[in-house]
Each structure stands twice: as structure tokens, then as C-alpha cells.
Length: 122
Image (cartoon, rainbow, N blue to C red; front, side):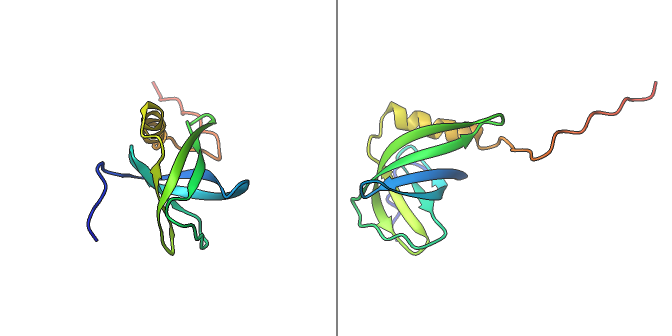
């Protein structure tokens, strides 16, 4: 397969809510993103024709809270594991969303509080 991407993708794991075909909504994960598009995985088969319009709601963990970012996209390819998407508006907003994803990707979500530091004996 010939590489058609004009920009490199970054591997991520971001929860995304996808709206398509009117009001149908599905939950999935973006497994990689670039300034031009993303690859979505759902864990079950989703068959959409290339050119199908989608609305993506990215849930990005900042280390303290989730922030949500919306982008429009079009399906470029559908396979057994997910969807390849191109962002509909490759503008400043799509670039800002991708930069938010990249910036916050390293933030950990802790299920337990940090342990208190122990005092160093004098």
C-alpha cells in the first residue's frame, strides 16, 4: 500500500464519541492522529462508506479533568478494525485540537492518591 499521508501520525489512546447518519452515536478510540486526520477503533465492526460525514467529540484527560474538543471528519477508508478519517476542516482549529491531544497524551490518570513523602532522617 502506498503511503498517502502528508503529515506523520502520532500513536495515542483518546476516547472519542462519533456521531454519524443523523443522530447515531458510537463510542470509540482514536489510536493515532495527525494534523490532517485520525484512525478510529471501535472494538466491533462499523461499516461506513468513504465520504460519510462524521462529528467527532474527543475526550482529552488533562491530568485534572476531561476537556472535550469537536471536529468534523470524513471517512476515507473502512476496514475490519476501524475507520481512517480525514478532518473536514484542516484549519487552525483542527491543528489546535491535535496539539491538545499531543500535549496532554502523557498525563496519567491516577485511581489512587499519591503517597505522602516520608521524612528524611537528619
